[in-house]
Length: 373
Image (cartoon, rainbow, N blue to C red; front, side, top):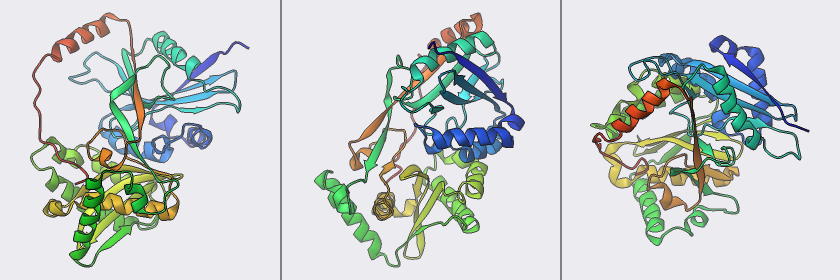
């Protein structure tokens, strides 16, 4: 049987967030073979209603179905015209740049091959036929979901701490360097010696307490990154509101995993992340700068490993990014890829020429700090 594809576009906030389409979306995620937490409608909706609104992005969701029973949902958003897009019409993924992964949601009949070989060329044909955009991109795709001719993104991968088959923190550390094992144990002991140690994970109904703690996380984050561009993260339009909305909607649903570590009656580190199934997604850690010598972020991750072993997690996904501290904990990483489509128009050709010229300009390099110190 020759495979054919039908494309439907669900556009604008009213359509994308309508009860009817949300049921379709939730059903696809529940059946998807490649599902992860950043495809969950609760996260995407929180982002659209806060950050997406603040950036004036317009949802342009693409739903593709084949006569073989496969379906693929691509949650695009159109970037508004501005000084960088005065005439260039662009599609990006919901959550860009806040979501670590941007794989489309896909379902297909049991026994069939994944639909990616047929889907990606059909998507490019659909975009070209529409003639509405010059550029579309999906970043940080798992290589199993990417177009077969897409080369892996060698500058980005997702390190993972595997917990299956391990019973204790020492089991996780035994494959790591002797220096790292010694350092983790030393920092745990030194932090506990400060007195009154506590590790708290906020329960689904503790929204008010979690919101108070979120304010403290943001203040500590700004103190940690003072003088760098990262300091202003939570002051950017819609960002803090996005986190607040997640506590309102995704914490009760069990998707948000928010924890704080205290020592000597003071909060010293935080982690705002996500859980789905048996995976913890490491997302936004920070710690109090005054406790830098105690490496509270390192101890916090160790506490999460111990918690995960008790709860039966399979893994801790450290997220897209090759920060050096992640590789102290693991050698295992998932490769990632990027997908780009560019229209063959005179406007897009001018843009590409201008972009190549811009790449020759000198760059300003800012300060860096390990998020897990």
